[in-house]
Length: 383
Image (cartoon, rainbow, N blue to C red; front, side, top):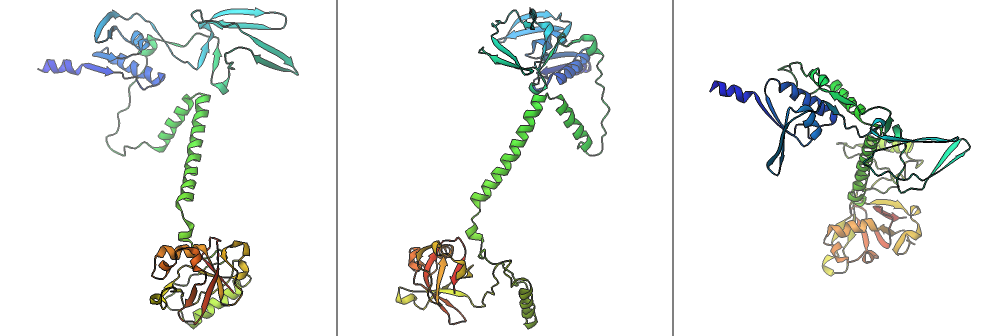
């Protein structure tokens, strides 16, 4: 049993170990497996024939569940894929030369070679090229991420693989498992250096597009989801100062507020100065005898001078002509109708509020609504 266990420990099965790796990491992984194969049996499954031919000692090809070939590998070199560069030594060459120009044309025998049809014009120290073919013209250079090299395609010899070291330092058994910041930065920079110019440019564009999309989505969500009419309780002409947190508001506190207002707010640079009356304002019941003596409070309303109201902002009714007349904004009416109070249920439309009476609790003040504005303000305009 002990000998049987030793055999099991010397057997490795690798199913597509390089399936999601780039070429550099593929070579490193396969080099490790190649060294391990000298000490134990390694059975590797792959669809990459180049990998199998170079790294494998014995290649068994299976198709539709059946073995179709079983042979020893004879490949001595591994050619890199490197599709981003063009190696001229892989192509056939023809030359066209005259007193004005010299062209070197490279092509592969197994590919159909087109008839090149170009108009080339030399003017003002510039070369103009007119493409008369159905093929695209791509210029070699860093901006396109392509280089044309007058060399053979890079290849690996087995000796290089055998000399590749994969010994790693033993990890500490204690401490934080997270990578330090400098290591994360080093890995990120290494990955960026492995990118071509074109891939790096595309990555930057995608990151910028993601940031812009996030900002746009956030702004759109705020515009759609936030209803200002439900959260704004003060007319935009006013600067609201809240003294509700003062537990005791005595005579000295009143004087301080008056002095502050006179010193800083009397020039109206911050909006109109207005002291909200202690008494609340209500809309009185009308229409039915049973609700004539009832009243409903109007919350979140600002008293705004008639000077701030333009006639063309009226949607119903008319401008006030007397001191006890007022114009109410459509926003206040919407809030009243949404409250579904006993009094406001009698008003079916906004126009029904024309002629309604507004009352205060402590002052015997009555205001008659003569018009309705649509300034999107929680405002009551009065003289």
